[in-house]
Image (spheres, rainbow, N blue to C red):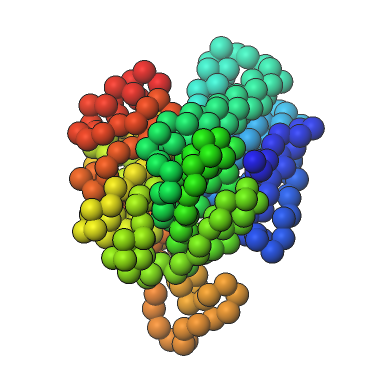
Length: 349
Ligand code: MRU
């Protein structure tokens, strides 16, 4: 699997996903602003990876604070935290990871810990968050593979693979485990995922690298594919799951879930516990990122729409819990009703 991100000699090294699949270009930086910008512009993307990236961003900020802002170390950390928090609003993994980091530096500040020791602790915590994500990915993959049968045709949306996480991915992790470890023969369909083409650029790219055959479709082909009986299961990732199981994921996911319900196709969400936001009762309260209209006016680099029009560009939508057959987590597969099970899992996290 890819090393999408790593901590190397006091720097963060990550794959710039904007350039895929044409170039495999890695950015190495000691500047948390570069990490923050990459999260905003989707160089670093996918809910779990955004969390890991933000944690490393905080670690870089602590190093910079030690070198340049020693006299106001903790207030500098506060500004680093704010910068990272304002990058993207929907994936709760960002806030989950930054909250974990914040607990470390707030405790250190309260206890009068030296900035040097605090920076060391922050680096250690970021590496721990990263390593935990690798283990979590593997457990989601194993759990989910039990739902997959030999000869299944699986449709997925956006990219919830190794590129979106630290190792196997979530939805694609399930596919990898079933195909590569359990040797099940699968057909995989990837939605193109307009406007930023994560399905066409990233999902096909990583499946190909792992020798899993994949068929690309444009988003508007999914209904017809299902009507033909060519999809047995749909598995997607998540950016935020509310307490009742309503799930925000890449725009287009909701349409797939409605189509799946119409065609009696099981619709699964695969996500780590870090994606569950128990403080939000239902999907209505999940903040949905709206991005620049420019993304809709263009296909790749080429403008496809005339000048002088408007575009609406929500990056995510919310699938209501009643359309979800099960949520695959690292701690097990949850079936409806979700609310008590999600709450219990989060309490024991
Ligand atoms: O805008 P992106 O590319 O960050 O959106 C990613 C998704 O919607 C993924 O499906 C989700 O983050 C799950 S990744 C395991």
